[in-house]
Amino acid sequence: MRIEKHPILNFEKERKKIHFTFNGHPAFGFEGDTIASALHALGVKKLSHSIELKRPRGFYCAIGNCSSCQMTVDGVPNVKTCITELKAGMEVKVQTNKGELYDK
Amino acid sequence: MISKDLVIIGGGPAGLCAARMAAEAGQSAILIDRNAKLGGQLIKQTHMFFGSEKQYAKTRGIDIAKKLLDDVGSYPELIEVWEDATVVGLYPDKVITVLKQEKYLKIQAKAIIVATGASEKVLAFENNDLPGIYGAGAVQTLMNVYGVKPGNKIIMVGSGNIGLIVSYQLMQAGVEVVSLVEASPNIGGYKVHAAKLRRYGVEINTSCTIKKAIGKEAVEKVVTIKLDENWNEIPGTEKTYEVDAICIAVGLTPLTSLLSMIGCEMKYISELGGLVPVTNKYHETSIDNIYVCGDSSGIEEASSAIVEGYLTGLIASSKLGKKHPKFAELVDDFQSQLENLRNGPFGAKIRQGLKKLGGSVDA
Ligand SMILES: Cc1cc2nc3c(=O)[nH]c(=O)nc-3n(C[C@H](O)[C@H](O)[C@H](O)COP(=O)(O)OP(=O)(O)OC[C@H]3O[C@@H](n4cnc5c(N)ncnc54)[C@H](O)[C@@H]3O)c2cc1C
Ligand code: FES
Image: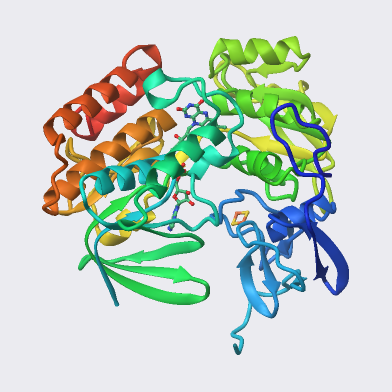
């Protein structure tokens, strides 16, 4: 769901592809994407669950405010994917719990 | 712990302009923003701004951001910029805690300018937490910063300028806007924006709201309903649209949690968007050397955020002992610019809110 034509903005056609994994599956975005924008472009809208009822949650504010886009990235839980830049090789996962302490 | 006399939190137009004026006065500062890109709301705004020439009206938001960034960039020895850094705590001894690349850093400041902007309000309806429901700012960010469509068919809620402008931007990005609903009987934003949408065939439904969203993993449909003059739902007027996205543009509320945390006196003022700090006419809060400017002191516009930022930067640095060579002249100029911006019918709400806040029209 990338924008193809735009009267004002110019999105470079030849942006560098960035490969990462989503729930273990190969995925890609482009240089300049956040994790959430790359996933959205691939049609992935469900990014997390509500903690009690496990209702699906997607992103809402895109400015790091609402916490509804939090995912596990490279083993680190509760990463706000809407403001986290996509990097090559990232392992991005839908989180199933509140997140646990991790070792660095 | 890092020591810095002046710290500015938030790098939107207000924070950028505060930093620039401080630098002009010879005051150094750290400017902190949680985003990877400075510019705040401006970096996603592709439309030409309304307002007056002095504050870059008729220039696109993205280009205003570039200009303000260049201004700050011309003082590299004075302004240190921290991007991707979130301020998570503010304490009465003026210690600031910052989360930056998974590290907690502490800064001891003497003066702090809070310019954290605003967050979007949400709307209560059944299933309002489904993926595919976004705030207008998020829709703009997806489209205008990352070049990604929020969906293929969308319904817009709210007819203020933001709802109207973002609807048009959605059409520019190739998204079909199936309807724009507004709970009030009147359109909230400028008539020219509404007329433009109608010309492009978007139906605008006033006295209408969302009853519920339908979908399993994401939005698949939306049901709207008409409201009577007492804002009660009129049974039998439900209408169902197939959409894969819903955009909520029902206003903003100031982001003031840091100011509450440090113990500033706060007031709830609906005309200014919610809970705001009480300030004097120099934008200083109830705590000495803690200042606020831009949307976080009350929801207005980029134009007023710019001028408030300049003013606050001047005042804060002067109190720290760095007085701008043209201090008095500039303070007068900025105060009269603010007065002008708030003149006229569209400023009435702001004037009312500022009056409630404390009587001073420059607050
Ligand atoms: C769709 C739309 C159209 C608009 N059109 C116009 C127009 O035509 N004309 C006009 O004058 N105005 C317009 N505006 C309004 C204008 O964009 C805002 O009023 C203006 O950006 C407010 O500036 P600010 O600096 O106060 O806040 P913001 O621009 O919101 O900037 C705040 C900054 O603070 C940062 N921040 C927040 N919390 C923290 C924290 N804890 N730690 C670190 N950083 C933090 C944020 O990342 C952000 O960069 C429009 C707004 C929208 C949404
Ligand atoms: S979408 Fe709100 S925090 Fe990421």
